[in-house]
Image (cartoon, rainbow, N blue to C red; front, side, top):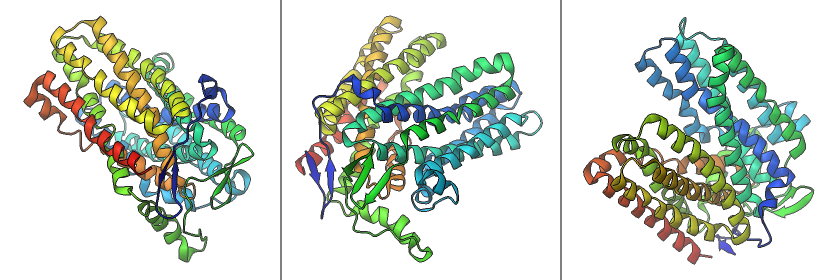
Length: 446
């Protein structure tokens, strides 16, 4: 099935009913898994893991809080994403191709930044630590731009859901390695060695890149995937020019105009903002809720952080299979309704109190449905991009989706104070309705 777009645009939502878990053992999906792991590796090294190092070095709590600002590049990465689409890196592009050249380039800087960060001393000069942490974040955000574009371009349409699941799985594994794994390493080998080891993991992505190969577009509408041609979902009216005079139009203006020419583009953006809004409200207030009703920090760590991560991974794998079998739109419906209903478990938790067994069930169901929805949502965004502007459009759409997790979810605490915990969770369930209404509108335009 298709959503028709103005002119010759079509958003493919095709399904293939013979897909199962075996889809995850395809070569390119295993490549996506490795790249997802490398993508998830740097985040904790500039956030939670770095905060532990700063605390042990007797850096003030106020200064540690300011270090959160080094994560800003992840939200602003769309600003330089046109460079990834439109600027070939000398020598590297000839050796590896455009996508792989940018990934190697960003990862060389990522490794250098991690090494420099590890060699810094928070006790001697915290400013140098902050500077190198910012360089790590910029390199990591650039790497994410390339990895997202690469994933979209090397996978068939039917593989996008499974690709999203493998990306989630790899990302979570990367965060575990740089989170819990880094803390264990620092305990026995020290912080300097820990950051050196983390930097040494990055080149494993290059092996995956050699296996995955370079995506190739043979004309404006045909892409080579695993040696076979596949239609691009959209055919752009723009001709890509490579002269300096036309670069801005071809790589900055064209991707935005291309997207805005699609019928219903405003509703598509509205859906992207709203779909994970209820989840963002829940996520920001779950830990305060659990603390207030009597759970210990160790119980929260075990159930929410351990069981929750495992459940999210399981859910994302299920979601990837559903996308392949029944299509993106129906999977979004199923996951949107399921995730809203599982939030009602927290209404019961508020009445039952600090029952750890019930919490394990609540967290498991909530994270499984959330993981399913995440895989479907990433597949939805992946299907929207024009492969002539993959990096730019995907970075923009993913940045827009973060609005629900940041700005729109900011009042969650005040709403919880006003409504109480039971009312807050019921309100979070109702937040699923606007996204589903917009989703219905999009279905009607098929």
